[in-house]
Image (cartoon, rainbow, N blue to C red):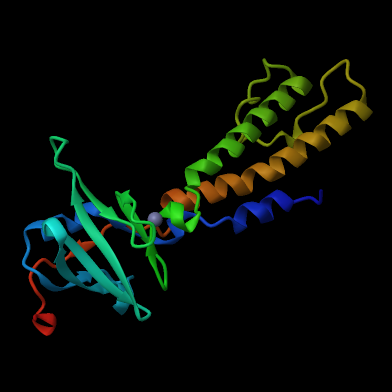
Length: 215
Ligand SMILES: [Zn+2]
């Protein structure tokens, strides 16, 4: 396997943080709002994603109807009356499942399962595994009592050869360790990007009917 292949593969995986989320909570005011056309005030949404019509279907279920790329996408607002908080769910226009969040793509609004995406946190597992592997390898070379053995910010590159180990063995082990560490940092970077990157989740809905769109 060529070096860095993990890096390339990891980067190609689509993450939900790369898309804007529509949260059920921002739709809550619509439960008591009049039917009609509404606008979501959010700079990052395209015109097609900003506008929707609030309609009512069977059993007084309210539905936000978007028209994106000449396709009608219906997001139903479903309140769970069995919970004390009357939690609100929004349905995925593609698979109809009840969700807390939907993701907005250029041509679509859908849930993450439908889009086959992975949360960035799911990438933590291989990252944590790799971290454990690095620590184990370090301990096998320098021993568990080495002061910085668990600190991955401390580079092991210049750590000296312990007594009683052959140079050849030492270099081989260090090379293996170095390869593990090279794979580790891109994963960390990706994690930080997903945590503190361009993630947007603060959407506001203008509850008042917009004059331009009133029926
Ligand atoms: Zn779905």
